[in-house]
Length: 182
Image (cartoon, rainbow, N blue to C red; front, side, top):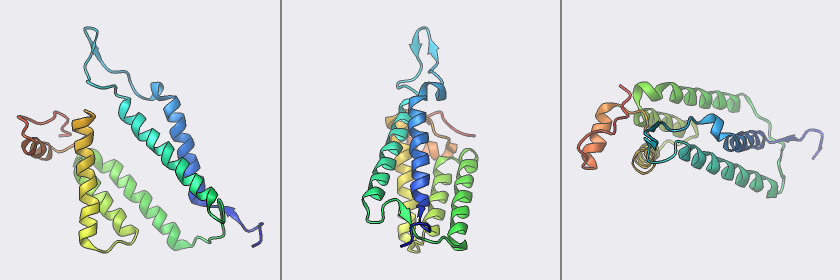
């Protein structure tokens, strides 16, 4: 192959940017997350508000490092001879539009509904056409993430009141979690 026509793979560039951004966010976490409120010398939260961002950003750094290592060890390395056509560019724009929808729909629709809709659209975008797989992929992770974040990490996620009351009823609690978006 002609080395002049070879370019660094776009996935490698994006992964490197995300990895550096995540690492910098970890370093400057104290400037990004507000300290917990204190009443009479005691914190009002059970855990530090920066725990969840530390976990997510640490996992993102680890995944980016793993991806870059995998790219480095493949036969072609970090280089790509692929030609990206208009179809690939359109899929990138659609993914950006789906993520924009997700960010804008989080508060009015709540975490669960916006996550299910976004994951279903992404699943279809990448070519999945099996309805049962789409339902499983779009439904199970948001429910597990919501329960893990709200119950284990004590993080309030925006959610519609009926969905919060349903979770509280299923889990045998006497009321909602207090983080309703409405």
